[in-house]
Image 1 (cartoon, rainbow, N blue to C red):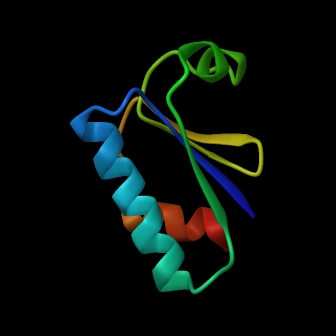
Image 2 (cartoon, rainbow, N blue to C red):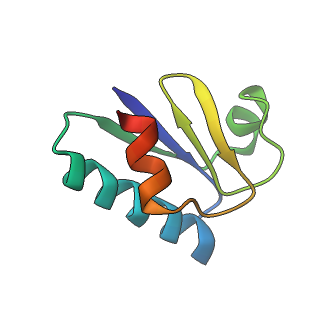
Image 3 (cartoon, helix red, strand yellow):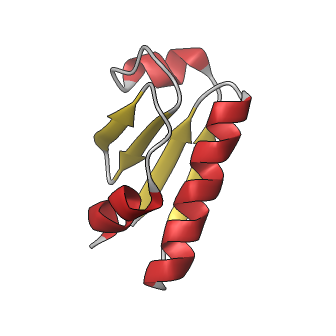
Length: 76
């Protein structure tokens, strides 16, 4: 499973990354977590507001920090 957290590194982006890390640990799954900070790469994903979370190429959340329970659902 490939997960990307997109954002420039602001407080919300950091919180989104920690939430995703916690969900991965809670679900005990193997996942590759990548932080994407390049605005061109983020825009190529169709994302124009951060933070954003992408799971296996599918944009799941844009412009807000997801709840851990939400992320766990995406990982199921």
